[in-house]
Image (cartoon, rainbow, N blue to C red; front, side, top):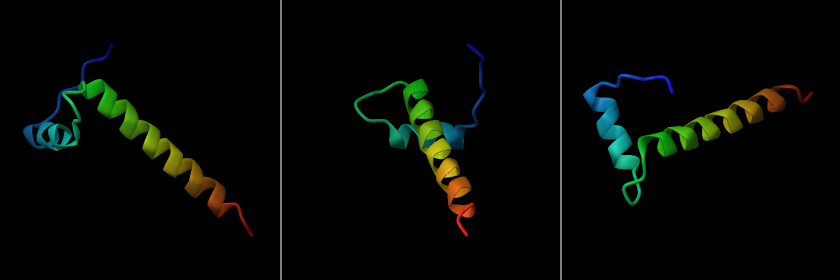
Length: 49
């Protein structure tokens, strides 16, 4: 698995999102899923004439 180095502010922001001591990879995966869903929605929304 690739290693990612985060600055202190990013770690604090991730800590604020943690629920029941969930792992950082769970949070990041969830955020990526949200980002991809929004990107897909924006992409498809721009195709409507």
